[in-house]
Amino acid sequence: MSRHLLESATTSGVLDELDHQVITALQTSPRARWERIGAAVGVDASTVARRWRRLTEAGHAWMSCHPTGFGPVPPTVAVIEVDCASGSLHRVAAAIVDDPHLITIDHVTGSRDLILTAAFPDQAALARYVGMRLEALPGVAATRSQIASTLHSVGSRWRLDRLAPGGRENLAPSPTHLGAGVGRGLAHVDELDHRLFGLLAQDCRQSVAALAQGSGASASTVRRRLDRFHRTDALVYRCEVARYLSGWPVSVTLWGIAPPGATTRITAHLAAQRETRLCASISGPHNLLLTVWLRSAEDIPSFETRLYSRFPELTVTDRAVTLWPLKLAGQILDPQGRRIRGVPVGFWHDPAAERSEADLVRRLAAPPAARTDRSGSSRPPVGGLSPRAPGA
Image (cartoon, rainbow, N blue to C red; front, side, top):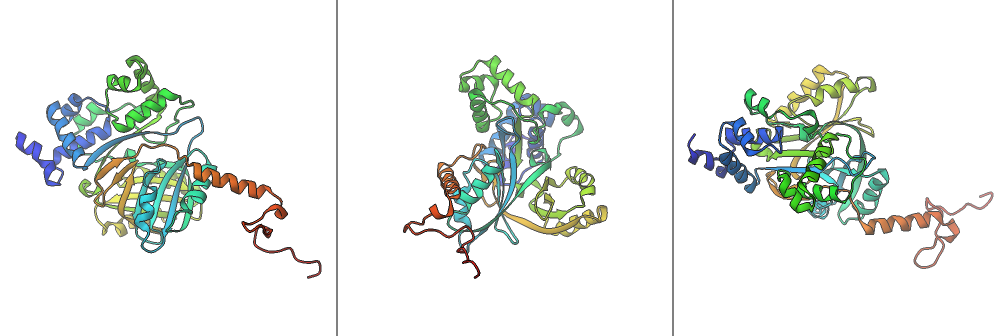
């Protein structure tokens, strides 16, 4: 292939075979040197580095990195559905898109407007976010939240799978570098860890020397920290591609009900499917959430038919097609799914919401007779009913 063809393919808005191979190689081994990536795809290091730079500058592909958690307790992962008042959807989305704990924001079809996936330090933080942040936003009509009790598969495991077998073998990572997003995480996180998380969020392919310079630590210390991160699966590395260029342009989220005794068998099968981006056990009336990428909208019925033929005991209760993936793995995207900019992933902290929560707790702690409204009159007991007179 000529150098002209190698360098011009990404300018057309269509990914060629080399683009797909480079993306697959980086999905397989996110921090591999360009020499190894080039050897895996059959070009020299400078060509593959130049091709990747063009992909990222066009927003067609990108890499991201974030920690799986920030302490000894696994985070609470939640799926939040948001209904918006007419004409307010984009205003609501713009208000929350920079919230660091929102991993994904999807504008979808169906009976909800937005689907958010988010991580919180605990369930109390989830309640605070929904009650004191989301529901206080102008334009939010209703919310529904469910907790993901188990993540069976996540998007960081998804691959284009366009490498030749020899290339895959040369780049095959060790099990501790899979970046599955379901690892144990770190029991203790200090200031240096946070500095390294921030640097890796900016560019997860930075060399150890660059990370040392940026963090103020020695190269040997940084290398030990990276080894610790990888050993404990504390980091999620992701190499993503704009969905409309991936060959899998349709994203569908399915809600289902699986009998408790069959859940393990069903989720193991679903997590291994080529189309699966997310498979989670969730709380609420549906105990299963599945997000898949498909070749076309016409594939939705056939995909469900395959599910029913394999698992007749599984019931798909609802489905939603993503119209605009506004945020994916901490990256803000345009309507075509191209990267605009990144938002470092972290736990949410909002002093205003915390003050509102503290005020509510103080009011709940006060006896009914002590609760007064702004006019100074006594509030009725919770529920809005005045005490009934004896014999009434």
